Length: 334
Image (cartoon, helix red, strand yellow):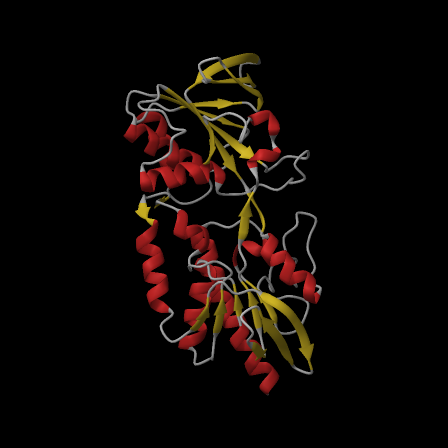
């Protein structure tokens, strides 16, 4: 059984099915794809997310999928897990693979940034939806100044999340370039703590953002966001490189909400006692050689349920988890 129908669950299910296993994939939402189904383009090359998702869905031909379905209970009976689903079906599974993914940090918890308070403050997810639909009343026609705030709900003691969400910097740079393509006359600012452009092609994307798009990167945490009488957004921050405070008036502010373990995944984990680390993500059996294994026999992990991942990381973990499940069956049968 694979729990979670995002890109990780789709790829893991496809690989296990190819190996000859009977796979049941469950997803709590109406559609498969997780966050990928809500994204427009992917960094660093701008590949349409829909193309990737369609390919992943094509690969699961032959896998039994249940959407709008959740785990009601899960218990170990001898050497099999008895899983009762919300659709009334009970499954006996010799292995359970958690691919429950992540939730975006709820930006409204950072009240000082004004999400849910000021109309022209949106999140990275909201902006990605706008790129796909070109429809969001909060984005004014031909905005002249647009800002991005990195690390919203990540690397933040007050938010209870000390971890880096890994993808926010690259996503901010990608979205800043895209917004500049839509509104070439706009000034675009990125407020960051540290730019973590670790992946292949990411640094080139960052340099292109400065060289070709004229995006300004300001090192400094935003301290306060307010609103003018004409509903523009006022951002106060400190430029930590110059040591000077600054105030910028914007037509749109985009908050780069980070990753945290999904509440749906935690709910399942609590039913069977899956351990979580201080950062809230599931704890694997080992940090190097057993990244896909739980300390409970027959339980496996892949993707962002064990920590922030890029999409390529997630797909690679899905394949690795399929091999781990196969090896588990092979070793236990011998």
